[in-house]
Image 1 (cartoon, protein in one colour):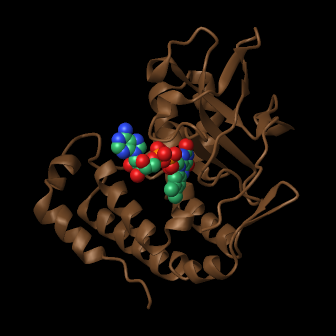
Image 2 (cartoon, helix red, strand yellow; image 1 turned 90 degrees about the horizontal axis):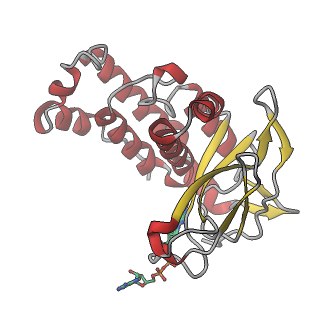
Image 3 (cartoon, helix red, strand yellow; image 1 turned 120 degrees about the horizontal axis):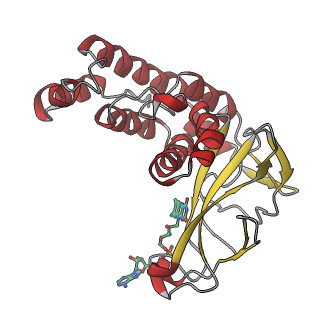
Length: 255
Ligand SMILES: Cc1cc2nc3c(=O)[nH]c(=O)nc-3n(C[C@H](O)[C@H](O)[C@H](O)COP(=O)(O)OP(=O)(O)OC[C@H]3O[C@@H](n4cnc5c(N)ncnc54)[C@H](O)[C@@H]3O)c2cc1C
């Protein structure tokens, strides 16, 4: 059955249920006019219906597979991800200073909902990347922001979150991954993570992992958890993917 995005329902909710005009009435979001919002929702609906939704069957019939340590993704996912990235959808709500569109989260949320409804398997990639963008915008150093945000926002690189370990799921405070200071501001991370959504993909130039780990003197439980950015390829002096970092995908979940 073809998927049809609920564009008019979303328009109705924004216009009549949530006070969206209070958001667009602010100076920060004054450029998000009614016409612009309508055009964005319509285009997101078209992308969801025509490009994302048909991938479900393809993904079911040709699931991702691990081949000599490389995650081979399902046919068509690369092109559809590029369509999302090139349309600027990853950075819809991100800071314009780093290439984002700076639009309200109240608009980004229903768009994420539409794309997730169309093809959650693919949409989780931009979604996890958006989570990393938000984390870096809120907590990253200027150097990290300058280096990573433009690449994540443009979709050149993708982001993941690495919380879960075999003995630490709901009880995330039981995690054992260690972070040892190297003495130069970097850390050597060792441990095993499981269930990492879009933990690798053959079509991404770099995959950047936000990893929960414990410093040597960390308090027990959740209070002793720190967050580290672990790229698959360490950026070189020009900010391009350089030396391969010491991390490996060892298995894929069969769904
Ligand atoms: C599709 C999918 C994608 C995921 N992607 C990621 C990802 O990108 N990154 C990442 O880090 N993790 C990811 N995860 C892992 C997810 O965060 C864990 O599955 C989750 O935290 C639960 O942990 P667990 O699977 O070990 O289950 P457990 O914690 O072992 O729980 C098993 C069952 O016990 C119940 N339970 C647990 N504790 C209690 C309690 N104290 N009292 C009562 N009941 C309890 C739970 O509700 C559950 O029903 C993903 C999981 C799935 C299914």
